[in-house]
Length: 277
Image 1 (cartoon, rainbow, N blue to C red):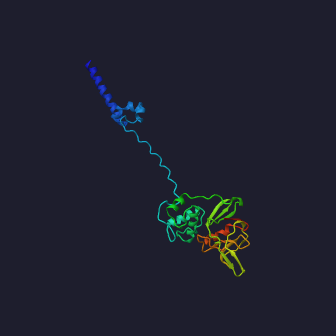
Image 2 (cartoon, rainbow, N blue to C red):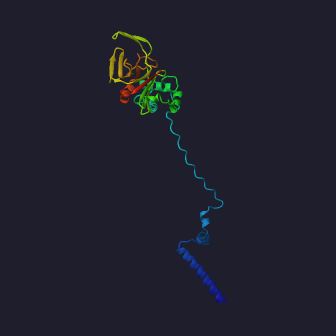
Image 3 (cartoon, rainbow, N blue to C red):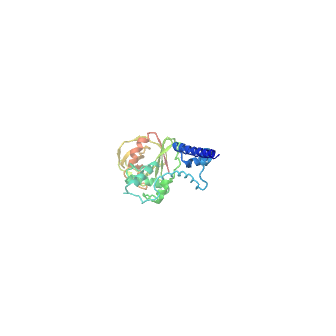
């Protein structure tokens, strides 16, 4: 009987040695074998976090889309005649976007830019200082958009607004240009060459462009740049080096020189022009 028990003990020891040797050869630790049942059969325990583990952080919210860049900085220095730099160029490009004509956007605040700022200020009900301050910066970001002027004339037309001293140019029914102007000053004048006297009035009514003179047209009342005539009496829309804030002409509609360079390339003979009083 004792021999049988010793034999059984030896067999148990040999069996344990065999198991340990096999596990070692297979690269499995005894600790792994201790947890084999859990690892092999309790799949939910493998994927679940420990009971005392901190909860995983919630995913971060997607960043909100950036607000659209304003049309022009809302704050900054006062800009005016003689100012230079990137912000002046940005101003010029913004004015072009809004259908004004500051000339080439070169970063220099010259006379052409001042004329465009005057027009912008008039449209937006801001005193015509010719400078860009807080009121102008706000309006550049939220500009007043004028309604269609005299759409009854057709999709291609020019409208001169005498009370506001503004010119509107439409092509294909769309507003293309808003320009500062200077019209007739109302004064009485005489032309000795023609032996006649007149009042310097820009006539109100509906007309059409009938004649265009390229370049300078030298006349008894002065020199007109690229004039486009709309009456038989010689009233024209033309460029002038001087387009002040007040009516100053003999009856023609003065526009800035750089605008007069563009004007005849857009407007054609026969186009309707309305002068509104």
